[in-house]
Length: 254
Image (cartoon, rainbow, N blue to C red; front, side, top):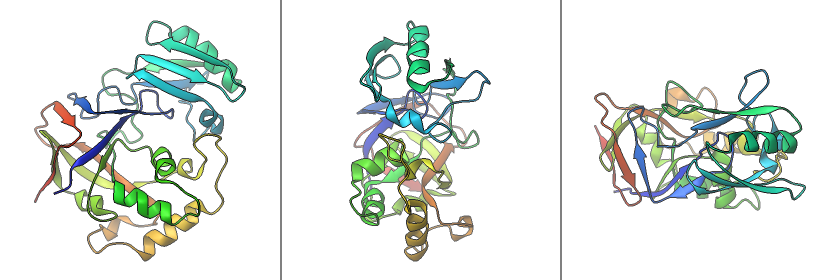
């Protein structure tokens, strides 16, 4: 039976994640502290690596989830900030690094998910990451992790095992989610996670090989195109908050 092998939260949307051994799952169904913060421009729009590739050039390393953050820019400028107390200092540093005015917004209740209708954690298997990495010359599994930026990684026995979760209630530890869809990817995975430079042919290769290798258990009706990897989730009916921990079993409820 597959088990949870890695948990990653992303305290600031589009910035580097933090690997943890255990995570609380509050009533909104996402991992605690995941995408709690977001960088926004003067127009109020969230700044992401999709809209602003320069975000990739900022190295952000968390000492504590959503609290203590060390940052460094491509020019070598470094600093450390604690949130929320030093929010103004982080805003000023980010503005200088990105060359545009910005502010740090917070949503402690639900965060800033990419899909508000599927606000639970994203899920992928290690086998999937290894398989997709093998399609691209020189690609490493660690780089692939940083490109797809999923929350929960499982040690399933075969690539794309997680496609089985779509339309099903499943359990990780004591937490029950529903797999909603196979995630439609944007341009971000095609960009170098350190520089933002695009990798030529990434999207085309992934889509072509995904089509050629689509497993029998994958929900074919969802593939109006094949640039889809990982699973989006939402809380199951009657959701109860709890905790997930590396090593928890992943059980599908038919």
